[in-house]
Image (cartoon, rainbow over all chains, first blue to last red):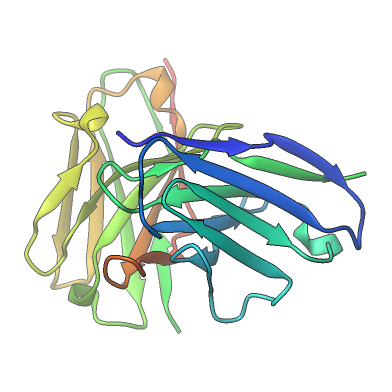
Length: 107
Length: 121
């Protein structure tokens, strides 16, 4: 199975900050990577797919990049509603695998 | 609009089975694969497998092989995930999610609200 190593596991930041979360795959996955946001008690929400495509309705302050094994999710100017946990997911091969998550907290 | 509505919380004893339902609406049930993902409280997301509601074909993570069954009833547009021989570490929230797109553009665009399954003696 492909392992997805996500970092950092937690991150403290302030409203207005720019933050970056990374995900590394244990083998090449082309651009078959998505990013999901999850708030407590809720199902995950899709932010980015195909490594860099913004899901409809998602604010443009979210962006994704990368291909192969290294990927990043960036949030350009944090808003209060962005404090949540973020997961990457590879859909290149079965079993699909998630990163362990990054909890973004208010500083 | 698209919605995936899951069945309610369950409490089961170790060794029992649980069957969780997922009823999509707002699109053609047989048009998209449905996947199941679980989340142990306080932990990350774990992919379990999928069902093609059109053909009934399934694919499971090796971890769940032999214990999980995924089925679909096209007459009532409902998918089911049944997990047998439950253990305490199966206590989790179980989600169904719709997969759209082809290779290179696949994504889970809609999710159910989640079903908490508690395994306790």
